[in-house]
Image (cartoon, rainbow, N blue to C red):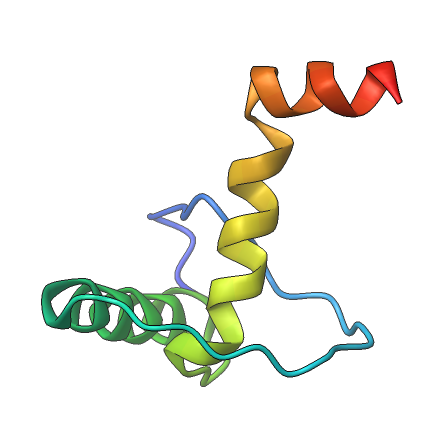
Length: 74
């Protein structure tokens, strides 16, 4: 594991999952693939972009104040 660099998401937890398909721009797909390669280099665990996307979305939503505020009103 490369400790000189930290990424927004850390080592991935093992979770139950469901399949979800989405469409994204080609540039975003390339960025996701580059991020997955950097993740693999940083943590020594080979992952693909599809594995990282749910964790990236989870981290994004956890930090979204508007989303958290609306979730707390329920």
